[in-house]
Image (cartoon, rainbow, N blue to C red; front, side, top):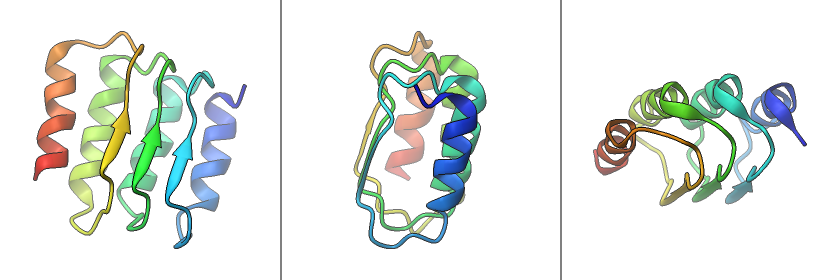
Length: 102
């Protein structure tokens, strides 16, 4: 399991990466804390097309952080964000959808 600390290292190393198109962190215990690092990456990265965060206990707070990261980056390329099995409220899912559609 990667966990929040491993997620931090992965996301920091990808801040300037321009070749990675897909990132799969599914079922890695990323948690709310780790979602903060993914959100920071989403605010900067312009090449990632797909991210899988399935089954990571992100919770509503984690999805709010992801939405904020997505909103910070107007040059993002993200097309698919998998968030199944994260125990989140519908409202936080709508925040992510709105961020991706803007």
